[in-house]
Image (cartoon, rainbow, N blue to C red; front, side, top):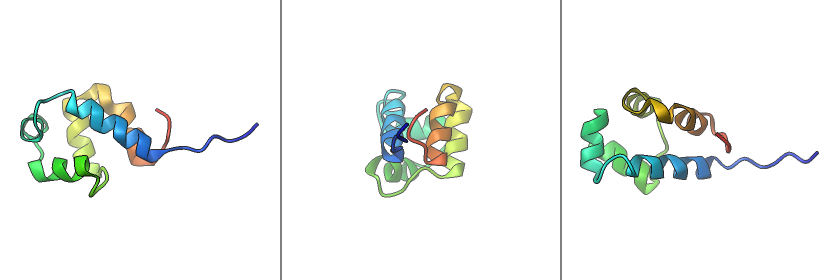
Length: 79
């Protein structure tokens, strides 16, 4: 069968949407997870991808996002 192309950008978009649902502002979310507002701003604007340190903070606060965060870090298209 054909191999379906994976879309890491789609997974990152899903992660961004899930995080936006957790808090009303980037500053509030940053406080929730213990990250800098700048780190989240870069992630949401698309200027930077998800780094390991930020990923750890997200999963520590929101373990239900572990699978999605792992997929983003691994560059997978399906989680």
